[in-house]
Image (cartoon, rainbow, N blue to C red; front, side):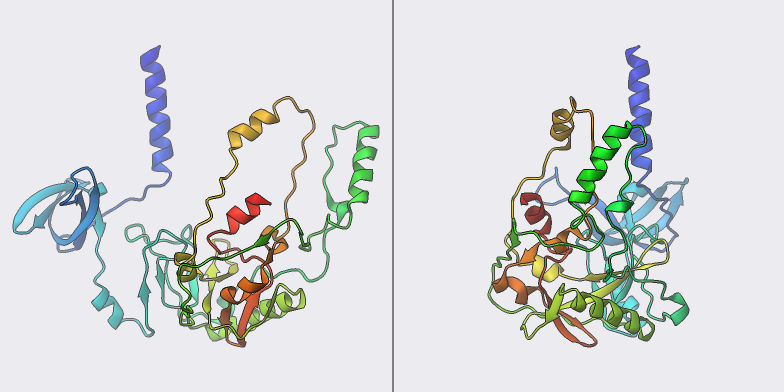
Amino acid sequence: MASQELAKASNRYKRNYDKKTNHRSFNVGDSVLLLLPSDTNKLVSQWRGPYKVVQKSGSLDYSIDVNGKIKMFHANLLKRYINREAEDKSMTTECKGIDDGGLVDVVCSAVIVEHDAQLDPETQEGHINQNMESKDVGHLELTPTEVEETYQNVEVNQNLTWAQTEKVKRILYNFKDVLTDRPGHTQLVAHSIKLTSDEPLRVKQYPIPHAMKEVVQEEIDKMLQMKIIERSDSPYSAPIVIVKKKDGGNRFCIDYRQLNKLTVFDAEPMPSMDAIVTHLAQDHFFSKLDLSKGYWQVAVEENCKHLTAFATPSGLFQFNVMPFWLVNAPATFNRM
C-alpha cells in the first residue's frame, strides 16, 4: 500500500513538473551556459560559460569543452548562449538585455510578447515585433468610459428559493451605485511610494510602431477622460510597452522596473488562502466579486504622483490612481 501511494505521488510530481518544462536541443558548435557550483559555495549553483558543444551523446546528453577538458552534461544543466554582439548587428534599434524574471526578457521595441506566448523553447525569450502592420494591431484592452454592466448583470444562483432570490436582488439594488464595470474610488487607503534615492529617474522611451500609435492615443484619451491620469511636468519618466497576448489582443503596460528597483519594499503580509477557507468552512452562502480595475480604485498620494510619470508620443502623463505595475501595489491593495 505504501509503495503504491509513493508511486502515485511520484507520478503526480512528475506531471506537475513537466507542465513547465520545454524540450532542449543543441547542435555541435553551439555555445551554451552550464549550471555549475559556484567557486565560493559548492551548495550554490550558477550559470557559467559560455562553452562549446563538441558532441551529442544520446538524446539528452552532450559533450562540452570546458576549458580544454571534454565533459558530459545532461540537457537540463545547459542553456543556449546568445552572443549579444552578433545579435546587436541584426537589430535596427538600440536593445537592452534584461533578466529579472519579469514579463519581458528583451526590450527593443514598445511591442513585445507575453512570456506565455510563442517563446523560444531554449532561450525563453519573447519575440520582438518591430515590423508590425495595421492588420497585426489587434485590440487594446481599452478602459470603458461608459457603464456597460450594472447590478442587473449579477448572476444569482438559481438554486435559491424565491424568497432568498428576492432578498439578494434587494441587496443588489441597494448597492447599485458600486455594482458597475466602471472603477470607483475608495477612501480607505492611498498608495505611497518611498524611494532609496532622490535622484530623478528617466528611462528612454521605446519605439512604438506607427500602426499602434492611434490605439495607444485612444487609451490615453480614455484614461484622461476618466481622470485616471493627468498631464505631468515630472522629472521622472517611464516608457510604455504594448504586450501581445496569446489571444492576439494587446495589453497597454508601463515599464516601472527601474522605479521598482529604487522603491522601499512594503512587507505587508499576503492573506493565507488555507486560513480563509477554514474560516468559511461552516458558512452556507458565498458571493464572488470581481473588482473592476481594482488598483485604479486606490488613489496615489499627492506627493507621489510625479513618480508615476510615463512618456507617450503625445507627451508626459502621471497617474492619479495606483498603477498596476508598481512593486508595492499588491501590498497596498491587500492592506485595504
